[in-house]
Amino acid sequence: MTKTYEIRKPIWCAGCGHFGVQGAIQYALQAAGIELHETLVLAGIGCSGTVQNNIGAYGYHAMHGRVLPTAIGVSLANPDLTVIAAGGDGDGYAIGGGHLMHALKRNANLLYVVMNNGVYGLTKGQDSPTAKTPLAAPEEDPLDAMMLGLSIRSTTFLARAITTRSDQLNELMLMGLQHSREGKGMAFIEVLSPCVTYDDTYSQWMNKVYDLDADPDYRNDDRGKAFFDLNRLIEQSLIPIGLIYHGEHASLQSAMLSDVTPFHSLEDQHAGHFNQHMEEVLSAYAV
Image (cartoon, rainbow, N blue to C red; front, side, top):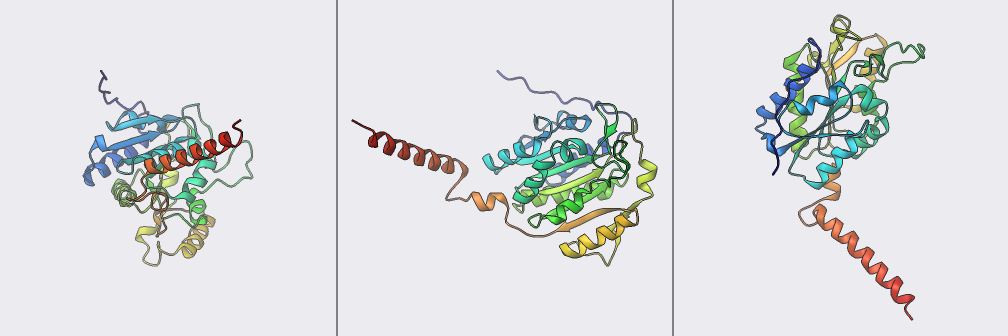
């Protein structure tokens, strides 16, 4: 018999932004009417990687940097499942950077949430790829994941929020969850989630965020203009937040799966081709 896993209390420091991210995920699931037993939360390594222990849905703790390929596999194997991948900026942008690029390109039906605090909190505060002035190479510019997402033409939902603006965070999380559940592809949400222990950026980020949702001239449906506007704001040392881009592109599921050819049929088809090939090889060498 299996034992039901009991929801754990978060292990995060008091004041950690991750509490707001967890609350937003829980809010989105409830507001969308999605049952926990119909949901799988996959998490990476680091402080953020414990979020799947706290929600009460099915959970999977992925290897370091490997949460996205695992989540894509799950979303293909069971298209009816609500798939949420979560992790930190180190897990997603450093060791997992290659997987992020290909996940954005493939546009699978899932929600990916990155908690960005600029540090490796679990391993005592080393710089992450989003650190503004990395100690090892202070001349480097930090990675901007939204600019990366805009540069890949098959992305369909890009957003950034900050935990101090909970209403906007909750709304973006709900929109992203609905986007993926409606089969429109991958929703990628980066959340500025300060680490109060090793890099307390609350006051710094709160004074630098620029809310695109409140800008009447911003077009979140125009990829080229969005790229131009984000670059202009970044050059002014501002941090764009809000719905960065919302467009349309075929999802990975729509390209691979259908009612006529579900995933298990693809497996059977490949197995059939292999068996036929082996029979031809064996018959050719039969004495």
